[in-house]
Image (cartoon, rainbow over all chains, first blue to last red):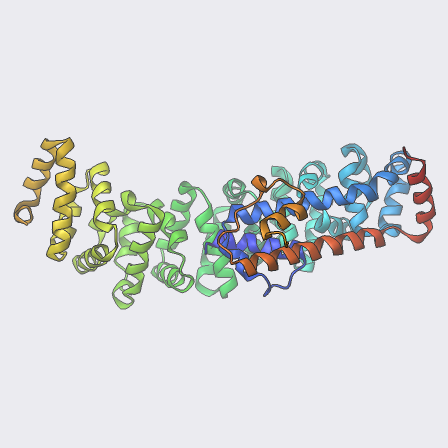
Length: 384
Length: 69
């Protein structure tokens, strides 16, 4: 179960009005499938709402904004106001929204179809945006705040990020940002010190916050992962915590991209932490993730940064993976990583070395020169 | 005969079965439970929508509806 699926599951449960403990099994679906369910539900709600809203549109279109805002603030129920916002012309909705109180507008945001929210929130005046953000923050409604922030232009976004003073609130809000591609941009809008403080949450956050932080780290681009990874690598306690967390949450699939995006000195620092020796299941998780997530090509060269005992332990684990020999050999072939792969093979039991010999003979049927070259590199291993 | 969970989900969400998410990671009972939660949520939303309209506007709305072709 991925961290992204957990985030999507939370959003779906909230939309369904389900208890947080209810429907936990939806997290087993892919994040894309959970999102499709949520979008389908929004679309169906909108179709249902049309019957209620259409007769009112004729009146609403002719009402002056002041009067329409008064009706929306005082007379109409929230679902109807949100549905009206989706049916009226954007300029008219904006005219009404400007006159609503931040509290009422915050209410509307919780009910607003994300497709409508995008257009409306984008054009709301900055002062109004900040007031609504403060209102949502005071209610602890990070989910709506994240959805709201997703649609803001840069100036409004910077203003909103500025009012989210608490790092845990910021992390919680960012966790609910819909678009992963926006995450990078949002984090780049933060001062470096703020990004540093977010990373420091690793050391003292509760388990929910840690899950959010891991999600964030696994969701940003490789460039930003490298930067955040370097911030963590500057502090051994932070790196150790990152590893502990990966084991606790069983989320190697999410941590692996972060490890791969780090620069070499940081990768070396991470791979030589004493925790690897103290908790052998960590290494097991790493290679299993490599197998499931097809990371052989990027992970195999990292073995060169490992200590010798860790390389030997890795060899034993790879030898046990059903297709470990075949997949690692393919990675060695694609990346010319024969040196490190052969040294791992040397630490494996003979039957697995024979498996490799068979794989190599298969390559030789296509490229005899390659087979001979690898056999030469293998030295005594070639006698197997 | 009772509809399969995916047919039920397609009806609930008003979309073609090919537009549905893949639910095969869930057991049949879990799929049923999910459909029930979606159905309940849509019903509650419908109720909330009806309740959103103030009493004084209801006669007007009925009149407007009856004038529509």
